[in-house]
Length: 242
View 1 (cartoon, rainbow, N blue to C red):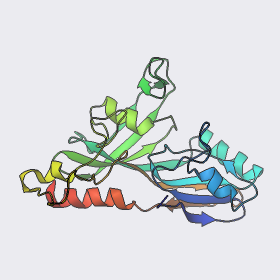
View 2: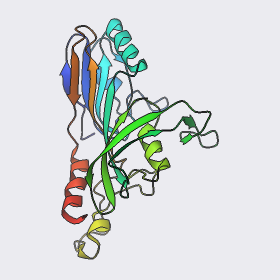
View 3: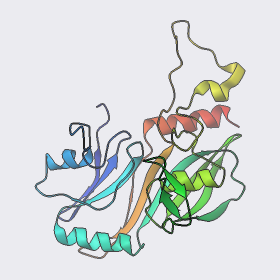
View 4: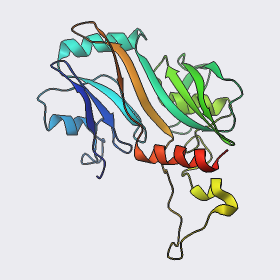
């Protein structure tokens, strides 16, 4: 795989990675050789403990513990919801408020395995967001998820009418094409049979996490830079999408 995880921070207690898109957090149950962070880390560390997860298509910052005590401490912070997990999401449409919160319970879809829905039987789920940048047909938002439900950002923005710009499960598109924003100004090369998407995974990136170090209790904020595909989409939107 071309893109490999990179280390943002490491000490005796934790290792924090920038996860590439299409990397699993844990090994696949059926195809163990699929690229995943646990296997990547076990090739260089004796012990590794999973603290939280990111969806396969989501890039960005993720924390692992290197010993049981650090794992216990971090797990308690996540459970107490004192950890700030900040995502950047590019959504469809013009989000009507500059900032707000989405407080809707999320549950598994009993009829469609792997998909989540808003339902009264679901677990309490809270997302606080603010608009970062506006384009003609899209909005870049920062989302702070106070609960770590499966597909939380994707489900919450879909339910308020602004699905991710690319999301094959909850959105309207499975790829972001330059021709869609350049319209009549788009010119395909003579040798190009099919347009190559700028981005062909969910437009979601875990950009920042703030937590207390499990040993020193010092507050830490660690960031993961936007990957190339996400930057390319935003650059083209700034040029053509206003």
